Image (tube, rainbow, N blue to C red; front, side):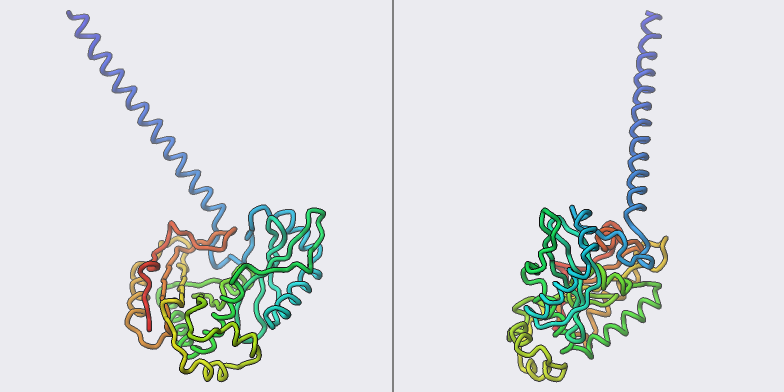
Length: 308
């Protein structure tokens, strides 16, 4: 009996110790995983103040990236011709990024309406530039043109927004995107360091794209007169405010975020639209040019702030 009494506690003790060993292994494994994730995060993201679009890439585009650069003049010429012929718009080419089937060319319109967008130049399997087959993603350029026209119509209201965001950024140590990022890897229409605008096809009662193609040289006063009595649906206009922390070691500032949300809610001097607000930490993805969704405060769909 004495032997049995000694054996049982020994078995129990060994089980307990074994359990502790398993727990220790799990904790070590979790710790290692976290370290690996942190290492990957550090290598994939960069301070937004340092980011100029370096490292931006598209799937399967490494080889075509080199081919496009080797034929840069041909690509640039083809894209400028495409925009002038199809959209009656002069553009300047900012960046070429290879994709799986060709090269994506980031451009900005010359003058007003001002917008950023892109076109694609196919590259054949035998590495030839298909200069006569340039195309744009369905609706992409049309969306961009509408947002540029919108910015012309509501120029005073957008200046108010620009001023407010500059002030709140200074007061709370926030920053926006560098101009190089807007030029080299941005294709979302009318864009500033602090926000971008998307105007959907039916946002205005009149067809803005048809008007533009008929009157590509209209100035602000012409557009304001043409659309003075045109109905606007603010819920079909999307304005995304995006800011970053200036300090590399700080998480998104809840106080600053709440202040921006409250201002957009109560102010009456902003342009009509559905406003989303994003406040990131200081880091931005090298490959996508986007802030980290895991380190972000957000007020967006389906809870946008609608301004009439």
